[in-house]
Length: 521
Image (cartoon, rainbow, N blue to C red; front, side, top):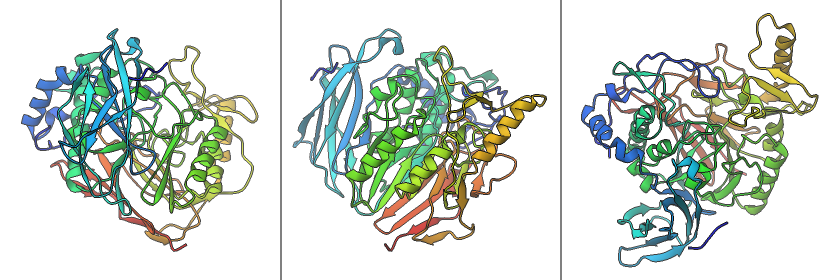
């Protein structure tokens, strides 16, 4: 129940081999990751490591999210229990701050080692484009030092798009002769490594693009599925860049099974559809576009369609419609793209077609891919889902379930399991539910089809191999074992996306040619 109430210069990357078994999701990961300790800017890593105990145990960093429209921002942060005062001080000058009040409520102490916290959620309104603002929050009963927030154009916008920072996913890799661990608090050395790498990526991306309006994350901000992981959220929210950059985050499978995600991020227009313990679907408008974010860890596609319908009805003048999901229903990584990644493909493809979605942004695959322009084939197909394990601690990643015909489908059947192999093959055939436009053109005008973009890991905490044979729906793909990100430019008549990897010497380098969609209608 509610009550009212740094880094120095970027380090060079070294791709280090380590002994790796399987990730939390049961997928085989590679022996490649960003090893912060072997980077070129050792002073920066040393400074980060010296601060790690303080960083890992401070759960109170604020997150900023886009509000329901571009004139609003949503703030979320923790305060100690009993000291919460959900107030954001926000204004155009240090001496002209207004008080914006919100709500606060208790954090599940089982997720914070027994320490008692309350989360605060506040919406700030009245923002104007191309303006500078100052803000502070009431944390633990004290007004924090002032921070600066700048808005850009509300007509021609620029968005940073990232996938799977997954702070803590480098566990099991070898660093300085020792295995990185996912222990609790400051002992989570994997989170220490990945938090540094995540900060580095944000610094490089924002230096290259100083006029970013906001960021979209396609999910898996953290790694520990269904377990306490506050030190991972602490590392994720630590970058100074995020103090001045709003973030529209997505619920990934590693975020899905605890309410901690819903404490740390205050999403606008949260619906009652697509819910897991972390929250549900939401949407917002910004500039010329409607943005819809679906929690595809909930496999009820009918609920997701209700969200899309509600969102589209709310923004009839939007020139563009973009959807973000975590699971990549059209990706190219091993082994998500031919197993759990396409679980919702037969159900979501016709929904996205029906509501004239322009672009779908995806994560989950830890590889980069850009699809051809796709649309459904118009045929009838079965519906599929994942189910939780009996103890509810994670999903049963070994089986897909056919909701239409019944029965479990083994996603990695033994070579001697004839029935299982046949069921997996039938599952694959049924998911060829699309038609693909001819490849080649990198600028298209008024296309009949949807672009599906899949982001690689922005932190480099974990990478996957590409599937051996490139699917016919993929136009371009890449896996160079380097952290990457995309930059989207959006005007009323143009969508443009560029994707970069961070080179070993810490510079952004394009890994795909610019792809552009133009609208005349």
